[in-house]
Image (cartoon, rainbow, N blue to C red):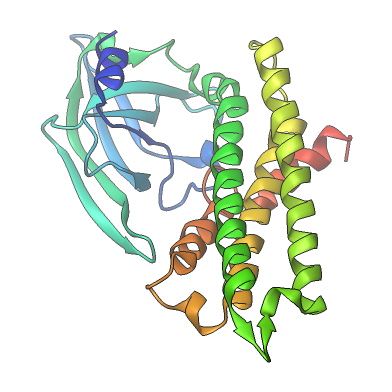
Length: 270
């Protein structure tokens, strides 16, 4: 209740899963939570690539409480100002977005467990529908914005006495990109409708398809937009360079495109 009330007020919530040796293979994480004699939890370890940890009020921490690779993970509510928590920023193309989080002798009360002890993996998997759908929706919006910016430019920019968008090479590029974005919109919408209709059901194939398609199309839209705008697309005067910086990383976070393809392939028994 405390965390959700904070989110409603506008508090930032960060999720800490990835570690230096556990990225796509989340089950390999080693950040350890040990139960003390008084029932509290002592946590030591490092998390990396943690979005918004530098401005978060609360962190949803995934730590190892048992030896089973997937069955030994537990979620904890970690207030960001808890003693023993150190946040160090990681500089990226997109600015200050992600962080290393070091946990040294962090003590949490028994009721800091979110859900059940050793049930973290199941909870993570149950949240994938919405996580991948949210990411797909965000990147669909970015793709449409990059497309609109590029379209506006090629309609107005003139070379050889006419708008550059009137040349077949660019006109066909615009047509192909518009078709890809519309296909992505229909896919994301269909997955959203399915998730709304059956909120307790997992849709690993459809959710991964939506995330894969939307992020790859967003990256393509930004790259195509920059190419169609020429040197202007590379300048900070226009937004295309910002669209590109936001799009290229989307095929990495929330499960890489390679992981999404692997999930999709496995749903076909491969």
